Length: 171
Image 1 (cartoon, rainbow, N blue to C red):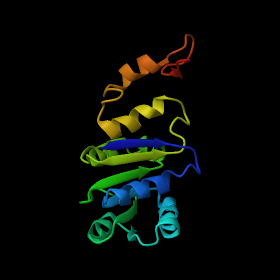
Image 2 (cartoon, rainbow, N blue to C red):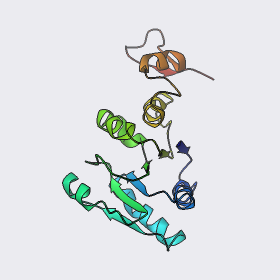
Image 3 (cartoon, helix red, strand yellow):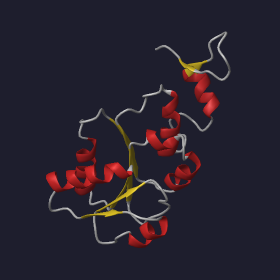
Image 4 (cartoon, helix red, strand yellow):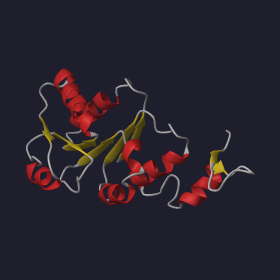
């Protein structure tokens, strides 16, 4: 199954995701910004102290070599993460990496059938940002795979604006 948790900061995305993984006994790889690894570790320690987790740092090779098989949660940052044998992956603060590393992330995420993307500000720069997030999540089932078809449906180019200025369509 796939899910997108778009909840504001402080809305308990992390603890909800941890609880769900524990309830279903998912071995989970959490891929997040390096600065959020401590947040995940602190949340597990605070709310689920009996649960095992491993933060993994270092180069891509070190990360792959260090991925544990005996902990329920592995916490790693986006840089250099290419593969793992976990049953679920969680992508936190997804909007911050989607544009810069789209091709690499799509290759990684596309192969994972059980994933969650989490974001406290998915539309911070307009609805156009949702296309990439959902393409990663469901391989085009929600908005299709053609970015320009998506833009033509949910945005428009105002007259007398420099190309390619796209503006969200009003509701």
